[in-house]
Length: 220
Figure (spheres, rainbow, N blue to C red):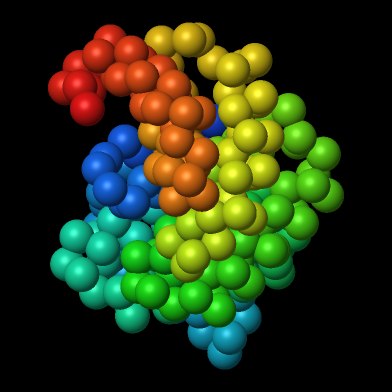
């Protein structure tokens, strides 16, 4: 696989967003780019001699993941992410690894694999902490993905503190009309409703609506 530049890699990280939707289908972090022929091909290296590079090719990884998900080929998607998690470890690309872990959280949540999802959450949160990115939007998005994974498996009480930390980061880093804030408020409101904190949940639902009304096709 060809190396990407650090600037391209950093842009991919900053492109992480929370996808708005309905019900509990939130917080996936796709980075849709142009799909190339290389994105369909399995990596082949003679005699298991894998070339090493400074970073994994995030754009191509996400494109190929979308290729599998669009065909509901979840086993292939899981193998794909597992392979690139190993590659990120091998070339010590910890930011790339964080992206892959975020994708694994969403995949395992979608496929109902609780143990795998919780393990990916633990690894992602620990890695983000080790990278000292506590006030970054990427860290906020990782918190939201982790919280949504927790909630999907009946752990709303564990999810809420992560949402609150993400709220602090997003509100200090994003414009008040940013659609990612709408997604966060909606996710938090659903979690608070589950915890029977109805007054705060209602307030956040209104905030989510206010944000999303400013988005193209974003009305809840």
